[in-house]
Image 1: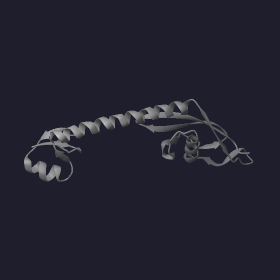
Image 2: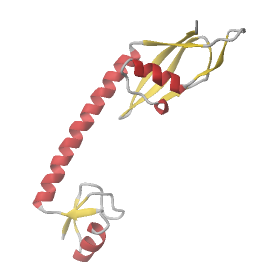
Image 3: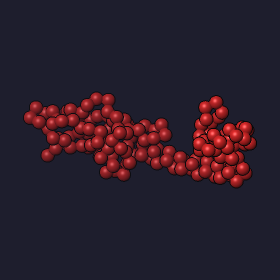
Image 4: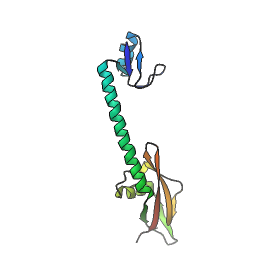
Length: 148
């Protein structure tokens, strides 16, 4: 019996491969547990169409991430923060504040995607690494100023 693997199966193969297996193993284990589907022409055509749709969606996501990267790297983002008497910030500038500032410019970034090398405790210009997905990173320039 031929099956199309829809999940990786250790010792057998990877997702999308068509394998020849014994009937009992194919029906009872692979298909029964949801690891594979019977490899009919209809199922294979559906799989191919699904792969094309997934590739198109991934291409769209990569384009959006590259556009966001260009926006981020060509801009300087200003964050106003409370300052104490000694000139240091009261508290620190957080990933959440940076993500909110980026979101104001229609750049979809979550606080978990923003990484700071050092804590921002004083006024100045800093850099933050933003993970945009699909291995695309952007460096955001953050200008921290005193809140009026």
